[in-house]
Image (cartoon, rainbow, N blue to C red; front, top):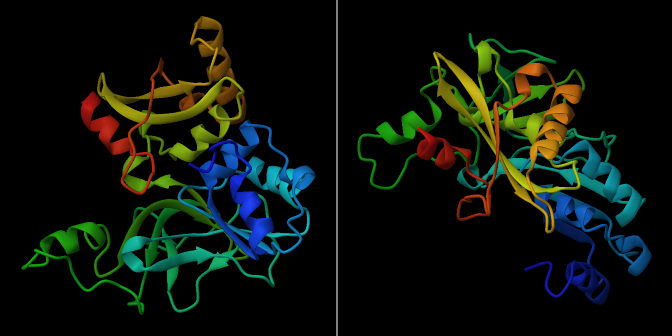
Length: 286
């Protein structure tokens, strides 16, 4: 664990080994912030030139934390891709500006775009992350899938002959991208599509919340938002805290983002790579 015996061990390694590239995850950075650790006050870190973050969207507040409490002159590089493509679709560039909450640019050698529900390219709107042409590291099939049906279902069912990666994103005019969550985990209350990361960002700002997971539950011919929270030590999910959570979401998102139910849980299910899995929770609830 990177927090045994405390949250300083990786920064100890960085100083001891003269680390130049510090690779980590958005969840780790968030955990450091919640633990109120300030490595810039306890470590040298003069060798560290870049910090890369992946695994889940890096919130704007995490950018603030890194530059305030880890190191001011560092290239914070949020990146995203997948094990299946052996690389990134969107990543960082040392010659572009770093903007809080935004992945800097699309990768070279991949025709990354964002499509709306009709399969048309969009900018400054939420849509599906796609790759419109073959790319060097694209898998050509799945093991034990002789007719290619599973492979086609995974990537090519949504748009004809277009790789659909399964991320709900937004691409701005400068080529920067914001990822709002997995497409298959997006919420749809009242027919309005919502990315899970929008809710996580608000909930996990609260000092009482260690972590959270949100799903959409089919309910009364609609979808209602159900939020599960892991509380930090010595906190209880009472009516006052539930109201605080809902007010935080309503004030910084929209009324449709506000969960119908907020429930406390001891832990959250994860994939083998450590990512939270909304689909597992949704399947159990349904």
